[in-house]
Image (cartoon, rainbow, N blue to C red):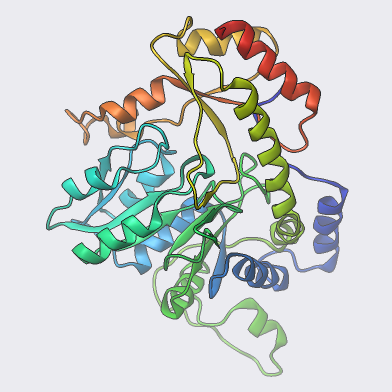
Length: 375
């Protein structure tokens, strides 16, 4: 079976985790600080704040941005449910907007139509690693006095107009889940150029403690911490950070290898008339976290039939990115909501295998099986 994805973890990553364990400092500590410094340098952001996962990062982003009960935040429904959940965590309401049918990223015109007096922010997702049009949304948010938050869960290593994702906005949240381009098992990072945001997120992730563990450890006199506000345990461990440092060092190489595989798909599937392939616009640079194929109405198989046929031939696939407004958890608050472009993009698309290292033989098998079923 050719899997849909798998993390690129090696003996060097395992050794880094081992060294962290043997150091005796395994929770949030010096390796977390090192990972933060290197990730900030990589993205070009002033600060990077490590957290337990991207969802907790999004939650903290909502808090420091001042989003609260009664507010509305516009976001795509076509995203993993954590995007919408992070808005709900602070008592605000997610307002789902349409995505562009070819990029699966938010449609800026539809977002503007949904702005009300209650709208406080736009949560922009870089879907499957393909950068969204950050400048267009930054201009929109400036026009309407809104906060722009980026859900870059899939976008580590992607760039927009020559700058790495993570440096354009004051709150950008990344994931290191095993399905992502680099992984720490789980884990996340929030980048920001705002000093106050960085300071408060570091406070909130560690129970609101006034003194961190590093300061206590290095102190020559006794220190008693105070807990300054009700907060959370959203810390990353030093074990995860040790792996993250190793993963970050090879991120650009991993992206380069992923782009080679994606280019083969683009080259060798482009003549199949019944599908639409993803397109990378000029000035956009994607890490190809996932490769999605859209089935036109002329396709000889339905989405589900194609997925089953591929599975029968030893090729895993996944449905297109989910739609949160059709999940049970959101059906009540989204009653009557129709997002035809979003629903069509979800229901007619599949994600095919793409990972590093993926052998030429496996890539050829995926291409062959798709051609045999669709041509």
